[in-house]
Image (cartoon, rainbow, N blue to C red):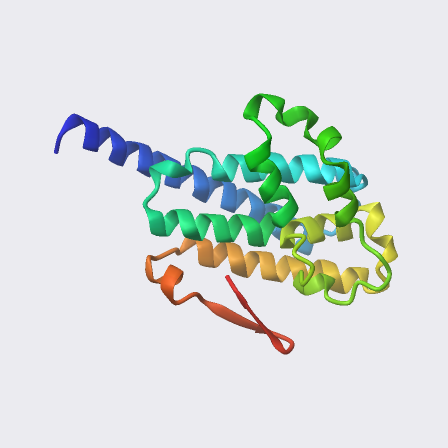
Length: 190
């Protein structure tokens, strides 16, 4: 094995370790809330939820070109499922240096995240906000709009744990034949 391929394999291994660590951090946050629900002050503002999600999603998608194609496809699907379309699109538009002030440039996208009282599919994330984003909105004070706030929180938390566990055991065949879960009458990919 040449030095270049050895260093590339080492970089891939390090990046996979980082992805597993970020996934474990997310699972820990959700499990902590499921076991000890408490009011979390950092999730009271939609702009802060967007900034936190942007930072996590940017960390997930950083240096993704090191990974093989099948793993890049799974990583993009996982990031979109967890953080939502708006946050995933913002990662490609904002350079890493400007990440702390990201909320100022995405006012329209942050407004899309706001829950309204007619949000029927929020717990299954039918609007494409991202499971983790919906979970944080429901935990924060802005989630009081939902009449079934507790149900939205617990269902999205269990979906996050299932999705993160499946991503932790990622295999190449998940790209071609994704793992489906039945939620209500709808099927969704992990």
